Length: 225
Image (cartoon, rainbow, N blue to C red; front, side, top):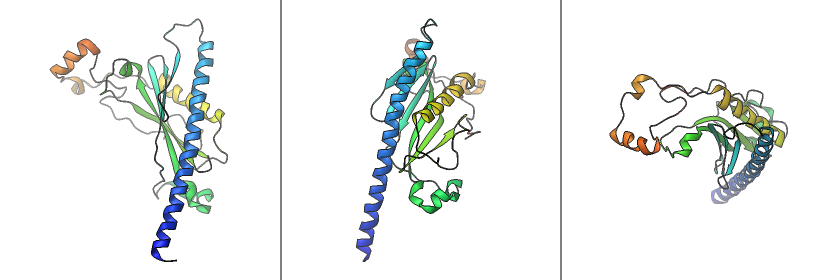
C-alpha cells in the first residue's frame, strides 16, 4: 500500500471512529435530558406544598444543551460536539481495556456547570459558572466520570458496562448535592470588590449586573476530581 492509500485508509478509520463516538455520546445526552425532565417532575410532586420557589425547573436548550434550576442554583448540561482522547500521562492508558484497543480511549464529553439562577434571570453575562462534573463516553457507550462528589463513579478507567439511567441519576444527584448543599456563595475578598466602573453601577440599577460567582476572587480547585 502506497503512502497516499495508507493516509486515506487512516482518515476513513478515524472519521468512522469519531462518528461512532459522537453518536454514542449524543444518544447518552438525549437519555440524560429525558432523565432530567422525568426526575424534575417526580421531585416536584414530592415538593408539593413547599414554597413555590423550591422547585425543579427543567429546560431543554437545544440538541446539545439543557438546564435544571433548583431554587437559587442552575445546573447547566452541555455536550461537546468534538471527540477527545487523553494525554499520555493519564492512568486510563494503563488499563487492560485501553491497552487491548487504544480506540476505546476516544470519547465524547458531557460537561455539568453550576451557575447562580440570578445570573440567568438578570442576564449577567460576566457571571461565572463552575465545572462540577464531566462525563466521558466512548465508542461502546462505556463511561468515566470526573467531578465534585463523584468519587463513587468510575474514575481513571472506563466502566465495565455502558451507562444507564440509574447511573445518570446518581451523577445528577451528586452534582445537586455538591452545588446546592455544599458549594455556597462566598463574600468576595475586599480587594477584589473595591473597584467598580460607572457603567457597572448604572447597569446594576436596572439589572443587578455587578459580576458575581460563588468563588469570585477565590481559587476553585479540583480537589476531588
